[in-house]
Image (cartoon, rainbow, N blue to C red):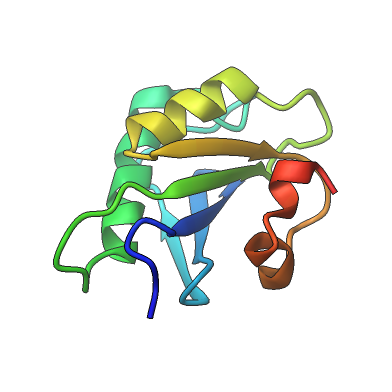
Length: 123
């Protein structure tokens, strides 16, 4: 059984979309935004991106009795070649209801790495 507050969601930012993984349940979700939020930046328009991420997190916790504020690991996949948009990514995750936010840049994290909290060590 999951600890109530030990919930982590891995969010990969794609072009106008989010792919989410609820780490402890190993459940994947994908939500395409009906309104573009990407342009020359992965998150060029914060408000539509926050709205769609809120919707995506609600879908993750659809079968939950209580809404949990998860730890969110944000991974900018789209336009990742440049400097990550750390401040915007933090605002995005906190605005969508995250309890704590970690920004990850590098290769895609596996479920095992996420469970081991590799994003906290940077390895």
